[in-house]
Length: 410
Ligand code: SAH
Ligand code: SF4
Ligand code: F3S
Image (cartoon, rainbow, N blue to C red; front, side, top):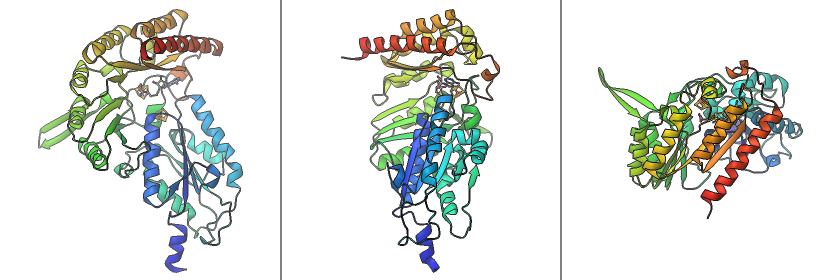
């Protein structure tokens, strides 16, 4: 067979990749980066799942609903997985339909991967967020004809991810680069699974981030969005010489990127109110490139609930920040809100409603609380009924709809 064997089995030419993504912007970016690695190996993207050679499900664990959707999609692939395994046939001999390689990757892989590996034998590959760059090699390994029985791979340990993930230049939205500045989170909001599935806060170096921006600008990118679970947590300390240290915080990093010629529009997400600074607002106000919109989730308007959530700020601090932000930048605000957190009484909810009425957000993502196994809040009684969660959700949604219509449409 000689080297022909390699091109039949390892080469991505003519092979098609299908990726479905659940969850946040960080996950969208991860899928994009991963697609870039496959495209660089000669794969093509397909939107028709039945025609794919590799199917990847990039999952989210943040709420029950997100997990259920991914599980149900993974289950629906059982039929496709019954197709013929073509590892032992050459390119020309292939009969269709072929058996695709199916991977369940990302946050839920880290969270529930072992269980899914046992329960869903048609899933070939389970890979956590730290190992996404290895997926093309894992796929080659599974496809390798030297294995008599098709191999299955699971890799879900938490560790620092490789910079290799960020090398491809493929962008879903032409001209727009989303740039990861940090992974994980160490804030431990009591309801949140992210620190559990994405690991502790880890920073990319300012050099790596700036080089990625420049590489993209050279390739024609004009719009840049910096991504982190809480971008304000960025604080990179480098040792210049011996005992001298140099610290680059988020505002410093933003200023550096703002200076890069060719970047015409600059934004970032997300800013946790607990360490959002006036200095940031000033930098935003002075830069014609920075978008005047801040996604700064308040989650709850009740101090009692904010404390139970371990958010690290009060409603008074939030209101003051929002006011300063508007005064200094003239910009708009966005938020996330959770209703029905354990112990949330009607008077707590009314304070959330009141805060939303005062701030008048441009956009608000409103979520019903969903207990996440392993989190601190999961140990508190989930005592707001589903009916009541739905009612509170609908009340806020309706109010936000009105505000958006009054304030933000022509
Ligand atoms: N890092 C971001 C949030 C990422 S998760 C931040 O700190 O703002 C996105 C949103 O999902 C959160 O802002 C919160 O509103 C919501 N969320 C997280 N965990 C949740 C849970 N257990 N139930 C309901 N909503 C939740
Ligand atoms: Fe979750 Fe809080 Fe971290 Fe956001 S800041 S990812 S809500 S723990
Ligand atoms: Fe979901 Fe993971 Fe993002 S849990 S919200 S995809 S970091």
